Length: 387
Ligand code: ACO
Image 1 (cartoon, rainbow, N blue to C red):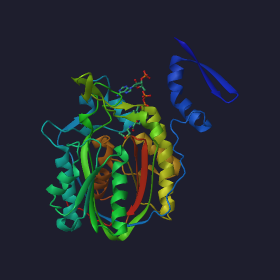
Image 2 (image 1 turned 180 degrees about the vertical axis):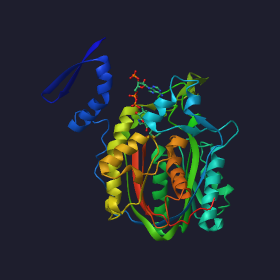
Image 3 (image 1 turned 120 degrees about the horizontal axis):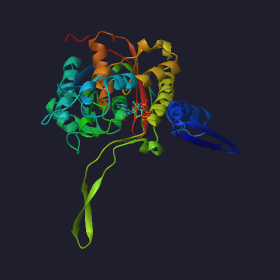
């Protein structure tokens, strides 16, 4: 068995640890957490001072909708083509299955279908919707999917645009749309989260391909009512390499020594453990900030609805904020991580299953690439769905 020595230096203090390979593997998590606690090597700093001054917005969530590809891909099926197992994936992540777009299937169509359901359940007149925002990092059309969604939903008077903020995208879009309602520019909006992660992961990389799935979720919001009670958002580009899907261009010679770079194969880069630690430490803080802005405590919250990345992240957050896990909505088992779609998909699941009832207070939080993070607190004013 090989032995290793690790030297950790902080100012004048130096600590040398010698461990066997096996022990070192077991200790990696502990070491990362110790380093974080001691401030020796925070994976990314998310301690930027807040500039937020007023976080209650005149915007109420009326309804939701969801749309997922029909094709499910189980952990066992994945283990047929990469070196993994249902046991490893479900124990480490809580994910058992995910939906995957098939050739010819459009993520923009799923976004439109989710938005249409939210619109139908809201009672809003499509022609009166002023704004449609689609949060996505993986659109059908790189120029944006929102105008397509608005068109398919008959929102002919709406301005429509996309927002890219990975797994925080839906919350960033919800807050952005709510600002337009707060200022009175528009009276109602559709906010959609949609991602087609299966198109962008490396299906030979067991570190990432097991995590993600495809889908779309949406909410309809209107000015007035209970309000978006509080929110907080942040980002830190210094951590961008922890989770990224960078452009990779192939050189294409043009003329006179000049070239262009045209799109080449791309795949996600992820330092899983750093992202885990970032999420487990940042989400409790951003949730507390949003609740403070709403003048609420965790006791006032009926449901915590977090980005569905990994069940262990949710457990770590629950422990840190001192809330039982059964107050957390969890549905990543059948969806995987659907990035910007995950919060509205989980909301739709929670409403349909009868967990979330009219008047309930929800505290939502998203986190992911950027790095980025955000939380929003609102009262669910929708009716129970009958489907
Ligand atoms: N199957 C079997 N073994 C695996 C797999 C797999 N799918 N993946 C990794 N392993 C192995 C590793 O090779 C390693 O083996 P070794 O000890 O022989 O080197 C061992 O399992 C442990 O690997 P770790 O990476 O330490 O596993 P960890 O417990 O950290 O779990 C995971 C990995 C699930 C990725 C976790 O770190 C995580 O969830 N991180 C957060 C990631 C995340 O949420 N990303 C998305 C953010 S959202 C967005 O913006 C897109």
